[in-house]
Amino acid sequence: MAAYDKPTLVYFNILGRGEPIRMTFAACGVEYDEQSVPYGDMKGQAGSKDWPFGQAPVLRTQGTSLTQMTAIMRYVAAKHKPELLGTTLEDRATVDALLEGIDDLYLKYIDCVYSDQLSPPARDALWAKHFNPMTAAERNGGGHLRFIDGFLERSGGPFLLGERCTIADLFLYFALEAFSRDVCFGNRPAQIYPRLGVFQEAVADLDGLKERLASSARASLSFNGNGVG
Image 1 (tube, rainbow, N blue to C red):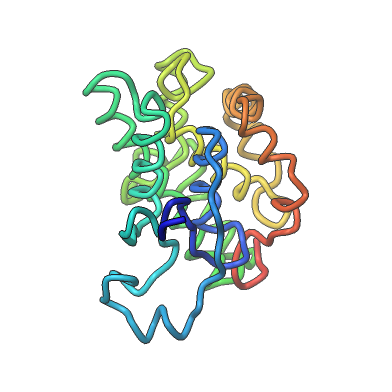
Image 2 (tube, one colour):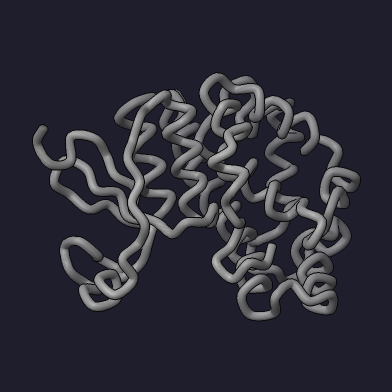
């Protein structure tokens, strides 16, 4: 078998930024291999063809090393299930915007995880600035759960673009999992934004994805690399 015939995801043994990619593969019904990050190589060869940004995740495929989570998600969907990108140019642009908006919010959570270990004061500040619907009009760098909920409200659900699931829904589902763990906000997001419950049920019922979500392999992984979250 020629090198890279089956794509190989290189990532840490956690959920983290590798999991939305795994979920995309599952939603596409595509098999892939997985390899743990050789940290010394990743940093020692940072900026090389194999490690373009000195970061993971990386997808080795067709002799190329693809990097950046959302770019890899787009690639997998484009190759195997293009409807997950949206069916019109406008939809595709909206999916791109949603991926960036969800990542803006998710990275605020990640900063709280790694910089403050989700301490109660830091968690309260995170909620106040980026999740409390009363603060949506204040300065938040564009990262606020109310903005994402607005897409569900306007689309009529159950997905962000209405009846069609996209990779933006996969990323949002994962982000909501992180936000809704007991160590973070618990069920508070779903209580404040009730559309999220219907959304999560719809995503979790997708063929291929539901098997990934229920797998013991997934359940064994920590959410984040420092054991917090």
